[in-house]
Length: 366
Image (cartoon, rainbow, N blue to C red):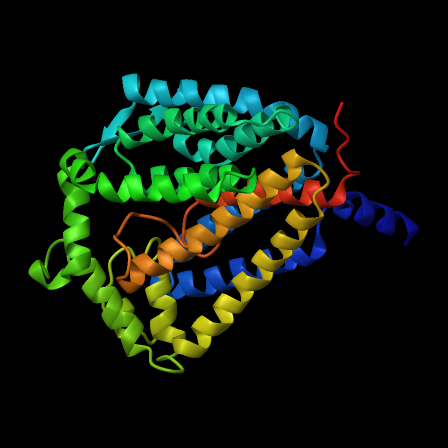
C-alpha cells in the first residue's frame, strides 16, 4: 500500500489536479461528440484516444521539467522552428495550394504548430532578459521576433495559424506593459491600412470575408459552411435534438463536422443548455490558468502563463465565432474537442508548462 502511494506521488507531484480534471472533462465531451459526428466510427475514436494519450504524456513530461530548463529551451526552440519554417518555404509539400508540411523522412511535420508555443516562450524570455532596462526599442525587438515567423506562415498561406500566433505574441507584449497609446495607435493604423491589406490578400481570404458578410451570395460554394452550421446551431433550440439525433450531422449536411465545425454538432444535439455547460467547463479551465498566471513568481513565468491562457481563450472564441457566422472561416479547431492530434499535443504542451509553473519551486533569476 505504501509503495502504491509512493508511485502515485511520483506520477502526480508536478500535476495540477484541478486543471487536469477540467482538461479531461473537456476531452471526454470531445469523444462523446466525435462518436456522433463520425457516425460511430470506432477507428476514428480509437485514433483520437491515441492522440489524447500522446498529448497527456507530453503534458506530464513537460510538467516535470524544472522552470530553469524550460527557460533555457526558449531560444533553441524558436531558432529550430524558424529554420523549419524556412525549410517549408523552400522544400515543403504542396497540398490544396498550400505549402505547410515538411517531410523529414520518417514523418511529416507542420512547423507552424511548434511556433504556437515557441513564440510566447521566446518573447517571454526576451522581456525577462530586458526587464530592468525595458524601453520602446525592446518592444520593437520583440515585435520583430514575432513578425518573422508570422510572415513565413502567411506565405504558406495559413491565415488561421498566423492569426493565432500573432495573438499569442501580442498577449506577451500587452502583459509586458505595452502602452495603451501604442496599442491604440497600432489599431488605428491596421484599420486605416485595410485597403492595402485587402489588395495583398489571397483570393480565398477575400472570399471568406465577403462570405461572412453575405453567405447567401454563394450558398452551395463559399457560403455553404456558414449556412449549414447556422442551421445546425439554430435547430438545436434550448435542449437540443439529443445525442446522435442531429439531422444536419447524421445526414451529412454539415461539413468538417469532426474537426473545425464540431461545435455545430454539439449545439444541434445538446442545445443552449449543453452550450452553457460546455462554456462553464472552459471557464473553469481558463479560471485555473489565470490563477496560475497571477501566482507566477517572475516576469518570464507570468508572461508565458498569461500568453498560454489567453491564446487558449482565443482558440475557443475564434472557433465558436467562426461556426456561428460572426467571424470568417479560418480553419481553427475547437480546443480539446475537435478531432486531430497536432493541435491537441500543442495545447497540452502549453498546459504542461502551466503545471510546471504552478508545482515547481519558484524560479529564481540568476
